[in-house]
Length: 187
Image (cartoon, rainbow, N blue to C red; front, side, top):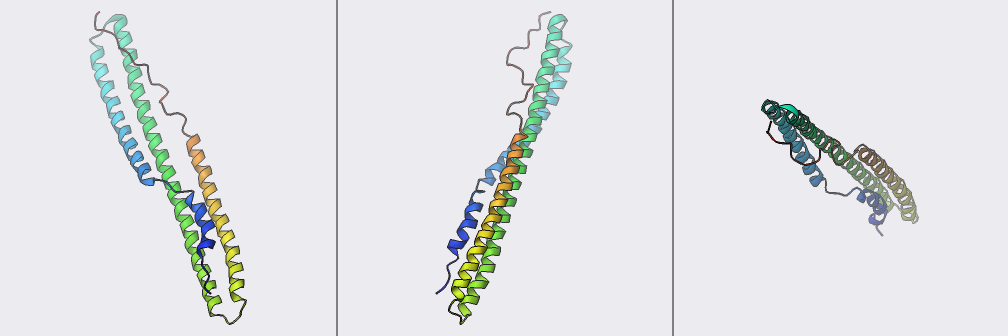
């Protein structure tokens, strides 16, 4: 009677299944946020240049107010660009972490499968009537060992992901100014 390895692989795969996710969508989000960061940086640079050239048209208190508001908006663009860049980097780090953990868990399944098949083949070719029972016992022990290793990989990945999330201080740049008019050109 042949030994079915699927029940022994199940605990290892169960741990690895906790790493399932749409890494393709995460990669796209990272790419989109990196592009957004670059665009916001360009907008901030253009805004700074335009505001500087326009400020000469403003005089008195209104001119001063325009200068302050223009700097606030430029700073908000710069902060938003930095936030998008950091968020893109965090998503990239998280995606790489998950992919690495998935590969490590898959390597464990492959290694277990190869080792277990060696035992299955040895038991099948043995004349000892207890060889299959001995092989099953050893395979069960191996399964538990590999399942623990897979669970350790998953738990380490979860801890690292939590660290990455803790590094994300906010979803909105702190310097985002309230919306509203900048003033008028009346002197």
